[in-house]
Amino acid sequence: MKKSGFTLLELLAVIVVLAVLATLGSRAIRSARIGAKKAQAMVEMKAIETAVKAYHAKYGKLPLLDADQGRDMEASEFDEAFSQDTILMLTGEDGGLNPAGIVFLEPQGASTNGVFTDPWGAQYLIYLDANYDNEVVVEHEAVTATLRRRVALLSVGLYESAGNQATNDVVTSWE
Image (cartoon, rainbow, N blue to C red):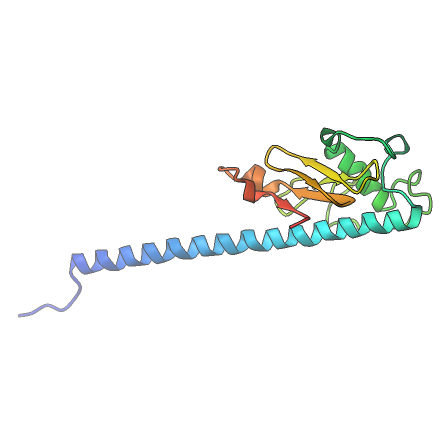
């Protein structure tokens, strides 16, 4: 009498094929999620750039403290605290440096106190042309660039959260 059914070898082959397909599928989904977050970061950085340009058009200066206007600032001065102060000016929360209280940039999600975070939860880094020579020097451990522009932004959340910390994990506003 012949029994119908699957052999152990056939079952193992099916399990291996399913495991390979699941692995490939999960990598594709992860890659798609990262791509979507990078696109979101680009959109948010462009919004901040546009707000900086609108602030400049209104007040004739960049959203900098008066002491920083026109001076050569080191790239290291454009840190998280600097970025936070800039966002406060753009959102109208800093009445001293935005006397009209114009909201050039809508507050983002649950962010408060001028902290705008990228999709990975890291704060955006804002670099401005403080001396008005149309040149911004960006220096970060993963990116160094001299750009012919007034404002440049970095999103370093993926870079900081990635185990390999590849330089292509830094999202920039100029690419």
